[in-house]
Amino acid sequence: MTAPIKLAIVRQKYNPHGGAERFVARALDALAGRGALDVTLLARQWQQGNSDWHSETINPRYSGRLGRDRGFARAAQKRFGDFDLVQSHERIPGATIFRAGDGVHAVWLEQLSRVQGLSARLIRFLSPYHSYVCQAEAQMFAHPALKTVICNSKLVRDEIADRFAVPDHKLELIYNGVDTDLFHPDLVRHRAAMRDAWQVPQDAPLLAYVGSGFARKGVATALAAIVPHPGVYLVIAGDDKHAKRYRKQADDLGIADRVRFLGGLNDVKPVYGAADALILPTLYDPFPNVCVEAFASGLPVFTSPMCGAAEWITEGENGWINDALDIDGYGSAIGAWLARRADWPDLRAAARNTAEPHTLARMAGELEALYARLLADT
Image (cartoon, rainbow, N blue to C red; front, side, top):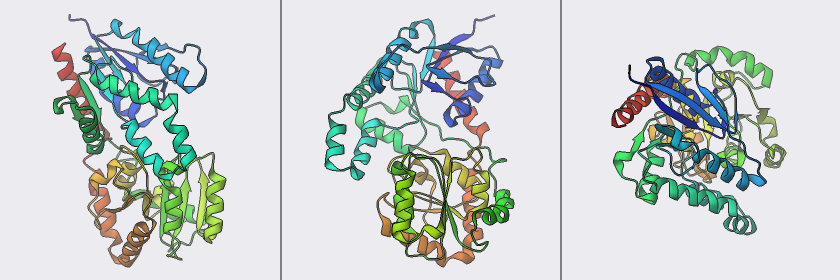
């Protein structure tokens, strides 16, 4: 019997319930179950999941985030030679496969600069940490060991091709999958109870924002965009260390009575069930799971062109696209949505239809096919 291929998964903090990890694990488990793979997780911190993988802790002593990332990368690289294939979810040169779930760091910095003051931009420009990440990213894409980059959107695929001259045959587009049974328009069953709990009128148009990192994902724009529409409510599900700043913004805008800050939630499905649409004016998001979940739950999506989910949107049919900082644009889109309230059932159906092909099984199958091709070449 042929010995299984030894594969390492590299992730500083591995959470088996995280989006990328959950989907990748399904494909790897399918191959491991047939004896094709022997999977080892290399991580600084990890939570044990259901997968029958080996786990090794790599956590050298460090000072600061630069020392943390550099130390982990160097320690992980020393182990790469012990495996037939290495799939990294971190920017570490020498891996066979890289999953670009976080996009291109330089692009993120460019987008971040749009909302930072001069001093913050200068500090970032001089930051040894950001210089290290950009350098490691460039070295990784140029490294001869790299066979495949898994991209979760055309946005990221094209950025990598343009900035690093990675050839097309190395760029594999595999969209995020979603459990279409768990995230379903039937979640509307939560509508009455949730709205009562939040003191939101049952017939009020309700936008949902879901996610942490309020500055990056556009909470300020979402708040300002509902100002011209006095009947619209907004629920914000997620944690942020600067949440008080956004509560103050709501007060200053005179909309505090129409905004609900829910904090972090273990289960966001009732939020989708209670809402009428999702708003995520993100500065940069390769492909957030929240958008896939919202579509599957029957919610049209308001987002930006720097969000991978924009690739799935047909304007006016299942969502609207505006620049992350275009408050007037989002306000106008919300106005167009409100004017078509009679068409909301059609918008919801179109949103659901958008997500239905992108199941977890499909994503696992695409990953499994990719791994099988790579294994055949070893």
